Length: 152
Image 1 (tube, rainbow, N blue to C red):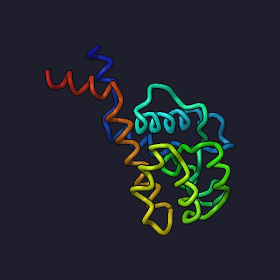
Image 2 (tube, rainbow, N blue to C red):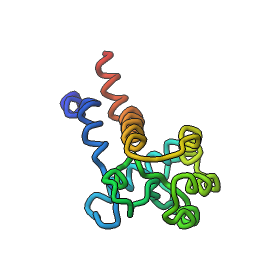
Image 3 (cartoon, rainbow, N blue to C red):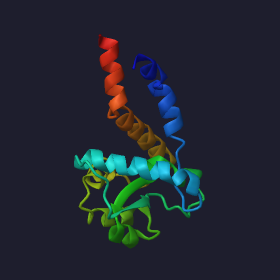
Image 4 (tube, one colour):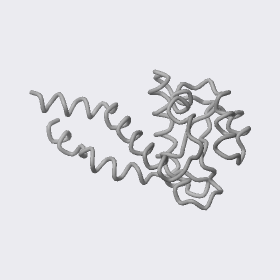
């Protein structure tokens, strides 16, 4: 058990890899990882045990945008399929209005933090990527186990 704990990455290593995760209809090989993470974040905010079957991944900054950050994990949010469809390729200010129609707690938390922003871009995506990395890392069972082992 101790050997497995030693293999668990430090937060710095985890964050550096996490913030590089992307999701696009073009990248089928990395989509599973991004989908898993976005659903895990939803489970955290909803305090649910199972993954939703009515969720759809939304690119806050449109995927068709030429910005390389538009595919980044910090630019993704889980929405109901209908709400996602209604967002189309709107600008951030219009998308926030559509997000308010979501019943998902993760979307509510997103709006609490970012509703006052006028624009959504690289700086916000990088910041959110790091926040999500911390949320995932700290709420991982292995993190708790490794911290308990350190305290022994």
